[in-house]
Image 1 (cartoon, rainbow, N blue to C red):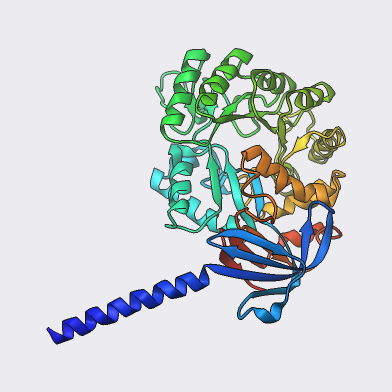
Image 2: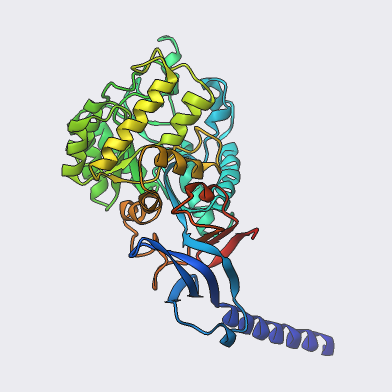
Length: 432
């Protein structure tokens, strides 16, 4: 009995001591040699960040380090807000697949394992928040919840579940089957007409998505579809927007061609994905509707230039270099017109963890470094409707912080190698 009492007493003191340690460690300090200030659009020297329970409670420029017993020393580094990628597919390793049969070869559980690996890669690349648009079997919902419960390591996720598409549309992988084979595609949500669109949208809401994604045009990666051709009518897309809006959920539209872009914007979507054939008229409509442009340059570069895929039978130009140059020009036009551009890469089309390589492509398209960084922080947070929580290093916001050695305003490629990553006040990478 004495031994039991002694053990119980030890446990009591261990709990008490642990509680004190947790209480002490709930306040953290970061001393940074530089911070990107979005107000001055400059790197300001020497700043002290105080963090409590995952939130920033103070940002000081006048402080005395000698009063602190412990702090995270980033005196040789510049700190920025955690980065945001607004178009990813964590369960997708499509760059590895040889043909459309591959997506059916794996059981649903395998996609959870793939997503777990890719989530860690993405976070360690400095992306503390992502919008994951289109996933099989609501795998993105499960992944989001697992991260939120601290079961696995990954970025904060906002997810859409499977995208809505028409019969024979983009993402409907059974398009290549002969008519005598009855096939129910569970990798996308096939919906034709306003009623079916509403039903599928309601199903998505039932499974707790944060966004709804709709394929408003064909795509480059699907058999039998044309990227420039519209899929859904204005009325069909509006049905999704209306149904999702009842729950405060926004709609993102995959749209390459101008007709599909117009249909989606007139229907009230919040963001246009890809926008490959965006023209002056649709740029003006983007501005009029105050919608966001989510244009992925990195996935296009990877497929057209790095892999040299042949899209000559689907696109407007069989010369890959010319196609990519045209995409850069389109991006540049939208930027010069002050369209709200968010950082979006279509991760999964290219290998995960390489997200930051898009920054230099945006620079090549004529975007200023400060605006490039804003697209992956402030503007992206605005799209997600959480600009009060993330997107900048300010008092009251979540402690999502990354650090690099050097000045990203003079060398944007520095963001391709981020040695320090913090999310919600927890350090997930520290290779400084």
